[in-house]
Amino acid sequence: IQPLFTRASWLHRHGQTKGQGIERLGVLQQDDLAPLPFMDQSKSIQDRFDRAYHDWKPDNNNNNNNKKSKTKQQILERQLLSTLWRICEGRLIIAGLIKIVNTGLQFSFPLLLNAILRYF
Image 1: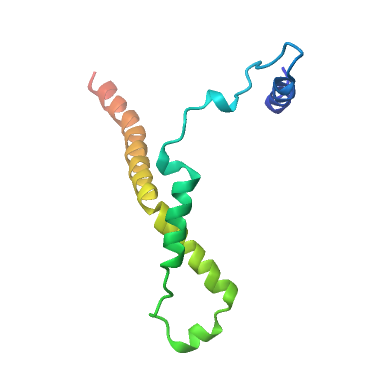
Image 2 (image 1 turned 135 degrees about the vertical axis):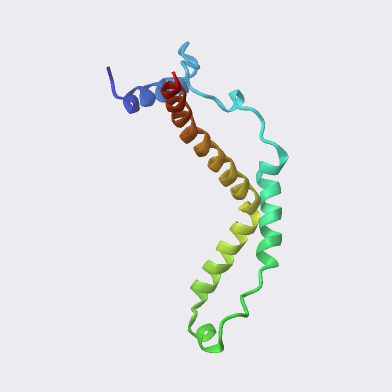
């Protein structure tokens, strides 16, 4: 059995050759994919990112000495991180809650099975 990477590489090379009778061979093509919803398209994300990036304001909680010591690079990194968090915040929170429920269900099944086996 060939390693997975070797087989995938072979499929990728041969799936790209057109006109030789081998067109698809299990290689996923762009037209095989479902269309993205508008909220995931780059135009929508770019608009939200631009708005959040330009609306960003630095924290005023720090004292003046700390503000002077920050370099422009650190300020831009903070602005980018804050912007990315504002864009993805809702999805990350929902994904976290789903992951907590998923992990809880995965953890509870063996406990439930153990309790049923102990009962009988």
